[in-house]
Length: 628
Image 1: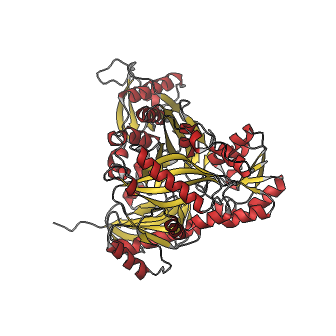
Image 2: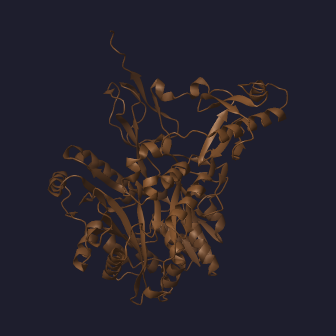
C-alpha cells in the first residue's frame, strides 16, 4: 500500500500507476481538500488538518501519523511540499516505512544550491559562475554582484520552482530585489539565504531526467527543454530539446549521470542545466544549475517520448529492484510537449483565479493530467495549476499544433485560466521555429496577453443563444425579449444588441462559421468558449457599482491573501503604477499598484493581515490638475 503525501494531479498520477500494479492507494487531505478529486480516487483517505499547507501537507508528523493510521507500507511524496525534505525522508524510514525517493544524504547534498555547486565542481561537472559564500550580509552580496557583473541572478539557497529568485540589472535595483527574494524564500522554504549567479542573456533551460537504483546503476532518459517560463515558473516543456545535436546531448546527459553518481543517487531525479543559446546549443556552453531530487511536474513528456512509466520505475526501485532497462535499451521516439493549465488571468497580470469549477471540460485529443473535476473548487491555499495537457507526435511541429488545438478547446467557467495564452505561445512563429530562451514570454508579453476579441462565429453563437433564450422565456419582462426584432442591415430576429465586458456589441445570428460551445448561466449570462477563452455576454450593461472600482480610487484585493509589504500610509502621494502593497497568495507575491497619480486617503490593512477577495485595502484620491 502506498500513501501519497501530496494532493491534486500528482497524487492522482501516482494512484493510477499504483492501482495498475495492484497496490492499495491512500490519500491525505486538508480541510480545503475534503471534497477533492484525489481523495475520491484513493482506496482510503485520512484528514491531516487545516486548509493552510503549513498546518497540513507540510507537517511531517501528521503525514507519518496518517500513514500509520491507514496501515501504509510506503510513502510517495510527489513534488513540492515535503518531497525534498531530507529530515522527512529520515523520519519516514525511522517509522519503518518505505521512502519512495532518493536517500536523505542525496537530498541534503543537492538541496542547498551553494553546496551542490561546490560538490559538482569537485565531480567535474561544469557550473555557472557566481557567488556561493556563507557571508549573507547585504553589503557583501552587493559587492559580489558587482564583481560578477550585472545582470545577476539572486537565487534562494534552499529554493526551487522560481521562488526566491530575482534578476537584477544594475546596482540601484539590488537591495529591493534581494529583499523580495529573501521574503519569498522565507515564506516558501523557511530559509532566506541566497546565492548569486551570472545572468546568461540568452538562457535556455535544459534538464535531464536521471534514474538510479540501489545496485549502483544510473541511467538518463534524455533531456527536456523548459525554457518557456514566466517569473521563473515553467509554462511549456518539451522533449527532446529543439536544436539538440548528438554531441551536445552526449555532453549534457553524461554530465547529468556523473552528477547523480556523485551523490549515490537512487530513484527519479532531474539535473537542471542553463545553456547559453546565443549561438545555438553547444557542449561547452551548458552549465549545471541544480538538481531536483524528486519527480518533476513535466515528467509526462519524458514518458511520452520513451514509452516508460516513471512512477512505476520509482515504485520498483523503492522496492529494491534494479532498473528495468539498461541505457542502450532506452529509446527516444517522436516529440512531446506539455502545457500547464493555471487558474489565472493573463489579461489581468496573471492574477490567480479561485472558485467553483461550474463548467470544466478538457479536450479528449491529448493526455490530460488534472487534479480537479467539474464541480470541484480552486482554493487560494495551494498552487493554481489545475491540469497539464500533453501532446505527442512524430515531429515537433505536429506536436505543437496538436497541443495548441487542445488548448483552444479548453472550456472553464467561471474560474479564469491561461488556456488562450498557452495556445498563443504554441502558435507564435518564433517558438515554432525553435528560437526560444527564458525571456521569450517577457519579450512577447504584450502580444501573448492582449485582450482577446471574439470572432464573428463567436458573436453569431452568442446571438443565436440569446434568441433561443428569448423564444423559451415566459412573456414576463425579459432583457432578451426586449431585444427581439432589433436589426442592423439584417432580416428581423437575426441581430441582437449585447454587452461584452460592459461594452455594447451587435451580434448577428448567422449560420456561417464554425460552431462554438455555449453555456447559459443562472445569472442570465451567455458564455461562448473560443480559442481557450470564455467570452461573457449579457443583455444589459453592468450596474454602476460593478464598473471598475479602481477608477474611483478603491484598491480591492483580487484574491484572498496575506499582506507581505505595505510601503504606503495615509497622506502619501503616489504615482500611477507605484506599488501600494504586496499580497502573497498561491505561493507567489502579487503587487497592487496605483491606477492613477493620487494621494493615499486611507489604508485599511496592516502588514501581515489576511484579506479576503474583494476587500478594499487602500483608498486613493486623484490629484487634481492645476488650473490653466
